[in-house]
Length: 118
Image (cartoon, rainbow, N blue to C red; front, side, top):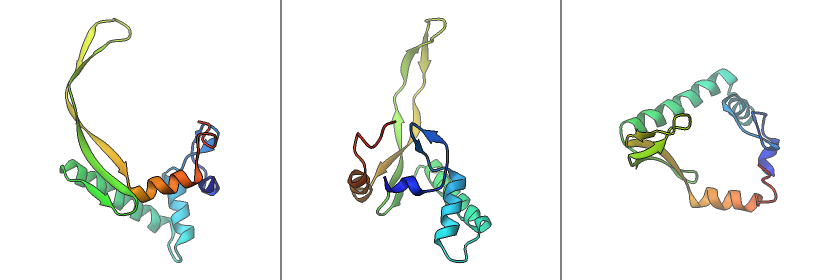
């Protein structure tokens, strides 16, 4: 798989996941003159901006990558695992990510069920 050559992160199945520090390292390696300190500040700024925009109830669209948005999760009743008593979980807004067609096609081109032994 192409992304396996990226920097290390946490282990998921038999594959490394890409974490914040690995993204910072990759950014500084791929962009001439970009230090890890500047890459970290840029990544933090982007993540804060996405979070602030979602918290304001507005979606974030990144062309060729996907969209972050909010979806209303209905109230529901669950069963407490220890007591067996019903517990009401209130309705809530939850963040969601919808990949772009381009991202879905890119992932499908390099992965299959056999490749992803999670």
